[in-house]
Image (cartoon, rainbow, N blue to C red; front, side):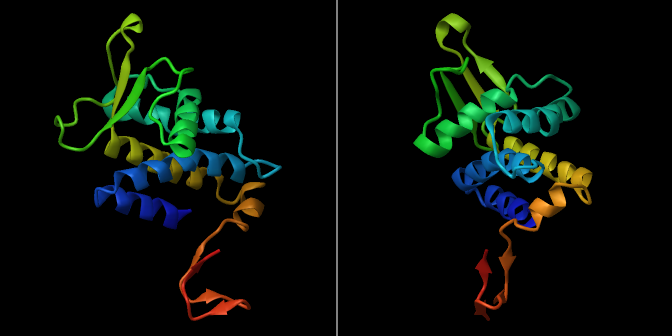
Length: 176
């Protein structure tokens, strides 16, 4: 999990925002499954994890409430990862847009433009969103380390093996 966090963070720093955004959107699913007795992801686990570990980061960083709920993030994640779409009919926002760093100076983080009758849009600073997901995951990992069922499930987590994975392959880096 730490490698996934590090590579997602690196992708964001390199400006690979599609990769970093899509990777960060999977973290609540993975985390929810890792602490579940049945090792399965679900929309309710995703939403609960996001609300618990990510949504509060905005209030501690910027002292205001995050308008983006775990349920909304899950729905957006489904659209983004499965259809490549940045909107859904069942969200309160006509479109969710991620603003790249420096444009316009980090002031459009979780800002709703328009009104309910004028098809509102939610603007999110992409680098801050990604970092909030990663910080939430790091905090969560510190909390669940050494507990069950996390430890049993984490033993099955796909990891990078720089020298291969014996007995199947040796001398070649693999993820498995």
